[in-house]
Image (tube, rainbow, N blue to C red; front, top):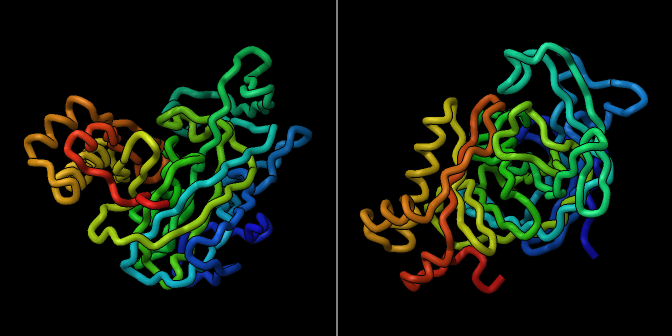
Length: 306
């Protein structure tokens, strides 16, 4: 029976001084119940979205969870076993918000509903539901980081690959890791252009393991098909360079590919993709297919024997 962390216990800043709400052993399954990005304040009957003074109610993360047996410098793998979202979600735009905020003139909120495997936008457009996690991370070793921001600790990365079946790796910054999860989306496109996907509440069932991968540049992601280096920075150019160089580091130092081979194969088979362009720092990922690594008789060791 999985341990349940209630959405009644949330935090808005990843901080090593935050007291954990519960503890779990390595390998123990835990369910995080999550709020939507407005902590449940926005309802169809009445727009109660937090105003400029209510930033502390935006992007709650459930937790933090203390993971027994983890200490600063350890690398943990978080297996996302199940991501469930509610049948209703919403999107919201406003002047000044997101990558189109300079031209949007009217504030608007749209509520969406699920119909079968799709979510329905304005009773006109059907989009395949693809639940994903906007915020997941551990407490940083240094200064606290707002849940609005991504960084080396993870946080608000808004990466569409962070969904059921994936594993994401973090370097522990504080005793017990202090893992938090929040900001689920029923669907979202890469870029998160107007600072939202289909925002909703839900549940994430996961487990964390400690792995022997010293030097792995984290956050790092793995699923059945690809490995992905995730990097956030002030500009897209900086984030892209960070993701590219981190993947090259994994391919050369861990997989043993010659640098020229790694670079050419990254050009042939890799994918550089934008996760989001709207948070305090922007996030880019570089995906590389596992089947190419198999040609070099290399298996990324993170999920071996999982």
